[in-house]
Image (cartoon, rainbow over all chains, first blue to last red; front, top):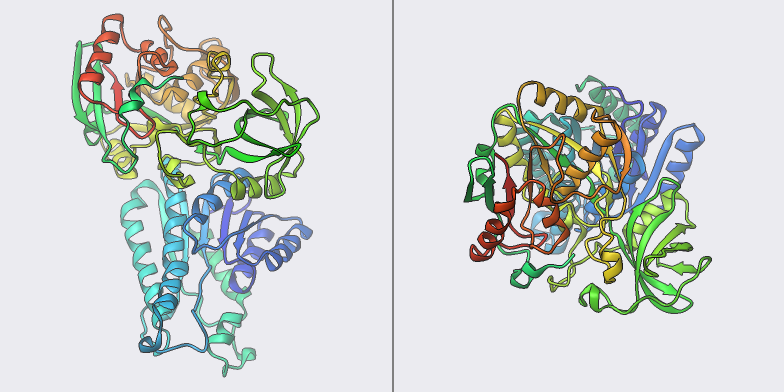
Length: 225
Length: 343
């Protein structure tokens, strides 16, 4: 698909893979709405993209909050037009160091589901009707190999990502005929703050950069019809 | 607009979805369910939907320290907004019982929360409640602040505040509507997919549905105020193709009728794509040039929407329709039942 002029929402865009995706999409001429809780970090990503001639707007929101989906969808549509692509990148590991399931509180488990599963569900629901009516749209779900491999200590996160992948498969079964495509992406290990918190013993120098993963996501979007 | 039928209204949580099918050609009224809608179309028909999302159009704030509520009634092409102002109170009081706003003059600054400031540019001659205002906030900050501080315009028959997500159609896109274009609310994606599978084409336009009630009889009599719309080229092609194959063009909601018929009139009978502004009033005796049928809510006989229905209901049907919706217990508000007029 052509990315120039395409309206794209990226959640979790203030750092890590989200910021790398925003930079790459900005360079390609996409019209970006970037979502994060962190107003200051998000503002610097927006400024960087604008300084390079791209279009980006900041929407400060917590994707896990039930009322954020209508707000993000409406603000975004007012600023760059109805979303043609949404990339659900915002995610949480929960408290670190990671805890075994037996030691995970209700609140921490629920927060992982709220951010990693319910947030993408609600925002997708607010956007796909218009995509289906127009007959096209792309929804990217950022997942992890923890969705299929049962790593000890990654319980709430792994469960939420497994559910997220199934969410994408079911959305796809329901909406592919209407022209809405759901892509699930495992970016692999990257040198991000989340990775450093989850695996503090890893040597960052040996890890791929988020920019490399961002390029792979863009390649997927180009291939998408 | 008055809502005689609303007195029997039930909360939005009640099961909705009755459909009254009026077939003027065969002289028939039939009680059915919204799930049966696909079977009432013929392959080749075209369904046109208004994809306007509902704005968080109600803003509470102050002017010279006194409370004021603004309801945004539409953006003008010069970047100003039309707005209707109310005094103290909120949606729990019916609009006709709300106190008027503090007396306003051009130049007054309204403080509307989340850093939103607007300046009064002009007052309407029809009603001191109707203002033209300019927000003194750049677009990105305006939209983010509006979505943080604004709430959807709410109906007095609803006991609890409605979240913004509840007043959207399932396919809402650009936030242009002051109130929900409610005719499309029952059209779930699964239902739209079944309509499409029947060989019915779908198309959309955006029409800035305005306020239904202002609390001022003189101003209510002027509703709907001029509203902007935009018709994509693909929708014009869809209409042309439907007519060529003998299909019927069915509007979802009165806003779609107004946009299509206004665009056809301004094009000298030809439907042309693009933006427009319409003050077209549709009622008894109006002859639609584009639209053959209408999916709408249930409307009371004294409402402006009933006037519009009349353009599609031949004379004898108007009384029959009214009797039928009353004796049949149809619900006539934004979250109520539906009418399809199609023959």
